[in-house]
View 1 (cartoon, rainbow, N blue to C red):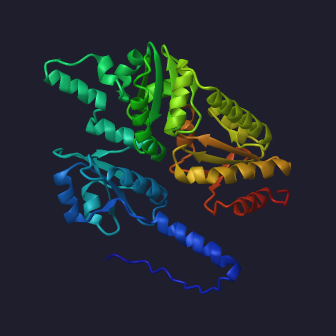
View 2 (cartoon, rainbow, N blue to C red; view 1 turned 135 degrees about the vertical axis):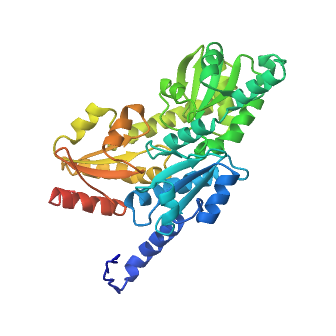
View 3 (tube, rainbow, N blue to C red; view 1 turned 180 degrees about the vertical axis):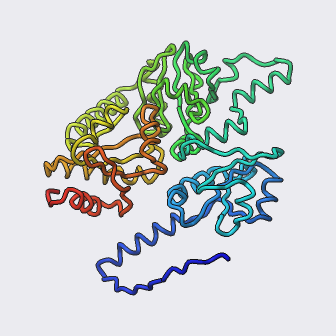
Length: 421
């Protein structure tokens, strides 16, 4: 006989003071935003219909599962990107506490389990990589054999018997879509303004139409091309050029990186940059404006004297940072919206911690950097941002409180054991 354990339920009533009401409302709004549903929730009937009509990537989960909760915002972000009109894959989820037989049928023995059901295949493919967007999109592209625009063009040429027009004419006024096979040859000679991007990156999506317009605007300038490469498909190229965030815009001459573009991403500024790099004369006003902007930037950099969190890269730096005393580490991804929101607070925490001379290390680890991937796997980082406190090299429980500066400082005070912060 199956026995159901009875869990006592306690109902607590409390009064929220007027001073807390604004905070409560803000937190409620954040919760509502976090609960937006983009992934398709499937029951057995809908599941069968979905896998019979297309490719489906399914998260089998349980609502009480901590790892599932951490994966939830990333899965919904993936669904928001992928679940568009005529998608190549549907991002879905199955609640195994509601549909136990369905989960058992697909060999779900732990939560979350991620399986890709490809149209026409009898067996699904289990995802076993790290649970971040680059790894997941790599998996999807690999399994579904997604072709880039260049590969599609090459396939079309083969079908047409190789008849085409000169490459120079093809690229005139267009953004050149590059791959691992075409990148080195394309940039080996001449001037190239290259966008390294990821399809899911919102900043990349906003830049895309401007990037297309830039290619049209500079088509009269000889010896320069505007191009792009998808880092989720061609990671080795992006790693070779030390791309650690999206979009990254690099100026490349004769196969060598000259500099990383860090200016504004509007069309006039981008066009002026290209003209400057290829030596198109600017009028005196433009030169004056550029000099003033450079001077203002240098002054701002000089005045920004506050301490930044330590950027840890590689096993040696990480081990040294956490070896002695207290270290509070943020594990993040540059494309993560929550990480970007936390960044100014994390910097302020580093400044105030340094000023208090408490000896606490405030640092951060970019989990998308190749030299840090194994660290993040070893430290069981499964979502971004993840905040871990280390005491003499020993990792403590994950910090799951509010990410406001007062709450983070209070947590550190409690961890240190006295009020130096």
